[in-house]
Figure 1 (cartoon, rainbow, N blue to C red):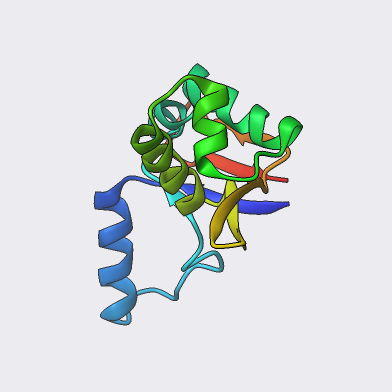
Figure 2 (figure 1 turned 30 degrees about the vertical axis):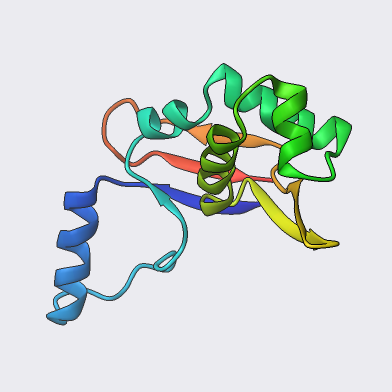
Length: 125
């Protein structure tokens, strides 16, 4: 499982500045994927986007155009969504005969929410 941090941009910036000034050591998970908040992650995992992920996993489209047709969404919309999902590591693209073939990488998300602070964690399997 891959650990992802959930940390606000301002806290991340403060942490980076403190490390650069030598006031603290770099965290063990520095440089890894992070999300600004649980809400930001949930905005990405809309019902429509989750349907796309399920189609990629179950039907294994051979192109973005095929996925757009199956989903009933416009190809540019699907392309933008897939770019976001790729950026956070939920999918990857493979080249096949000059086409980009989306492949699901994520199988399970486990979120640990600390109700008393902003020390939330996300594990991706």
